[in-house]
Image 1 (cartoon, rainbow, N blue to C red):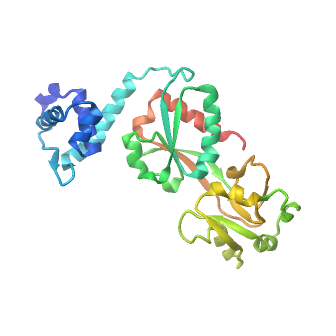
Image 2: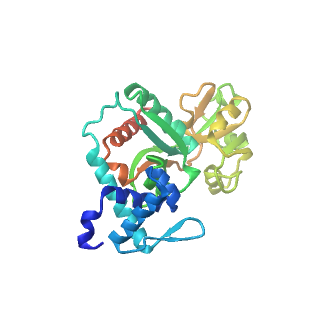
Image 3: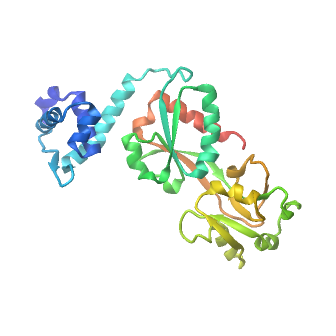
Length: 303
């Protein structure tokens, strides 16, 4: 950008550049900013003059950013984020706050994390609305950058680089069966008993009838009988209550559920770590910080 152009570069131009980079379409960017298409074309002309670059070229569908425009994307977002933080009140009053907070999570994380968080939130910030979305709805990095979601609940392996992250807890697996299941009478299951039972398995990807438990059994030269595979954890409790099947599930998924009994596994199965991630654009916002701290605190409560 030329030095003498800095006076003509106002905040609205940066907002327009951000919208054009997000939408890749002049009409949609104009609608997002609440201006007409001719006005948006005029803004694009001013942007080109300020930055000494075409910034966008026409394509079959909408417009494509130049290399210069792509290089500007992150600095522009950072400037807008910093200005937004300046305009935020220093103190956040949760009881009076009226805002929306969006979280992307797996169905496991919705039960293990979102449920206790929502319970705590209702007591402290009754007017805050929460939108729960799936982590599978698109790349987390892009959704956090664009502000489509404020926070994502994932694992260290699933955390994109360049984001703020915090470990929430380490999870372990338990064997779950209905409370009046014949095998539930004892204190613990032997490895032989465990393998002889009829198993249900939640499998997101890969072999639908084999998971971390089967890998651990194979290392011991043993195997179990998996007769049901489901794509979602949340259907399992109903299946277990209505059958003689058992399942190996994360302990927080079944904490406090009626009609089910948890038993320790008769072999070592590696657990996993749950992590919260968020973008720099939301890092300093007082409301977002308060909401994140409440979520972190609700994860520490014994389940």
